Image: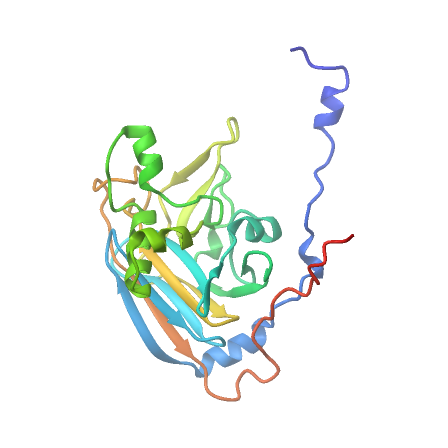
Length: 280
């Protein structure tokens, strides 16, 4: 079909941000930094390559995900510790903050609670920004590598995709079958992963992560959290995933709890204030 006369002018119209974030409540990063200075490590979990582990984070504590041996990306799920059906909503996080998250931005939960679950307080890869291909780090656009898409594309039966890793880990934590746990596994934060959309076709792409041992991203827990982290079978995601081809490394999760009295004025995030009447 030929272009209409107004096509060029219409394509040149400026974009309008759908959800301007300026009116969102701003996290008090200075208060968080003061509390973090006194925090002591209270727990740690080492996530093996091509596997996943759960971890608990009390509200008002911090959790850090670190590269410890080599370049490695991770797929992160976040739940309300007391109600696992309230979980991170990557779509709303993306709509409010953009395709990738960094310092000062938050992970938001599903309707009807829709509240901040965690705030990024430190990101040693914030220097990366957006590269010439449109790539950036810590995305909330990729759903997670999974065995269903892998089978659709290749016909294979691979059992260590991040979706399967997260399912096994959550089932073990809950003490339930994998069939029962699987529906609670959700779209992830692709920690350390460098991704974007191709300029010409709009396809999701990945490239080698810039993460190196010692790099980390740290979050402040706005409510009591259950985290579930998979060390992706794609390794640094420079070539492939959903196989054992890539070199993979563990990821370290550490939990830090501040001293009493260092979070004066802060309180856990409350569920969204919408009255849920939905009109007449």
